Length: 368
Ligand code: ADP
Ligand code: ZN
Image (cartoon, rainbow, N blue to C red; front, side, top):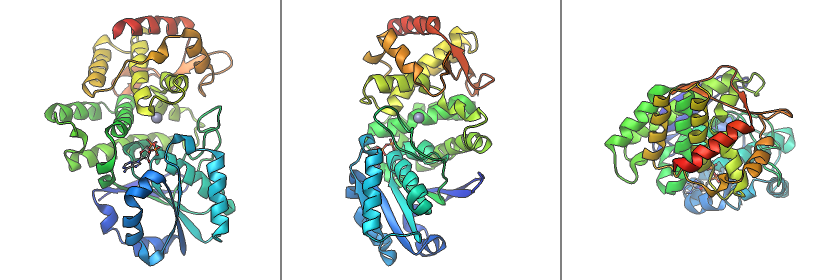
């Protein structure tokens, strides 16, 4: 089992392994957190894992609460419904929440735990690749509103995170691909070796389910991705110093695509296109070499990311979407630029304007 210590203000550990849920000493883990436990999960994960987990934790007979799977459930309304259910069940401050699910469950349950009775402990058990390498790490919790994503929430750290990659065996391919986009992003901003490792492994494994074909390799890849994110969030826990903005590489254009598609394009798919365009703009501005840009383009295609989208055709619509990006100011749009594979440009974010965008979109339309 791999253990990664996250040394933020209220430190905690991440435990990562294959099949660890069956081998962990739950009695001693549970004893250290609370007397009563409440699982928060979604309908899909519950169908697959509820029975198994309730058997595993039978000694503590946790209450199990679900909400409908999907990003559309990540709302204040779902949180309120869960709060009512908790109160009706008489759950008070001596309880600990256990989030079992993807990023949606971890973000929502984390926020719920942070405010229920002014805060109860929470542990995360992420079940998607995206939640393992990204969403569950970093202390951001929250929900969406109809106007913006993740805009209502708090910074709050879990007591621990238990990641068992055996959950990934039931995860659909497109969800694995979402996680892969963030793994690739982490490597591009901070770790050229991870970038090369990823491609080398992919070259040697042509089978459809290549990501799951070697557990040791996958564990090391997830661990490395977490270490990169950890380095960044530990230095800038509450997003006050600017460093944390580098995690937003590929997300400026990515978020615009998500928004313009009415969130029908998956996050990872949008981020992959964002990586493609933001890397090209990094090249246009003279920061990134053509050779490095080409390597990134080849990698995206080789990793089977779909780079074509109909949502980047209307310049005005994209401009509007960029203006609500949280890195934008009243005067200018901003994004993270790459200097090379594994490093970003100084100052974390730099401005870009309509002329940059026009040039980028003209190239994009012709490039595919
Ligand atoms: P993400 O983790 O990508 O941010 P979600 O929490 O919405 O987003 O999870 C994506 C989808 O995958 C949801 O429909 C969720 O119910 C489903 N899911 C989560 N974990 C698993 C799993 N281990 N096996 C199958 N489906 C899963
Ligand atoms: Zn992301």
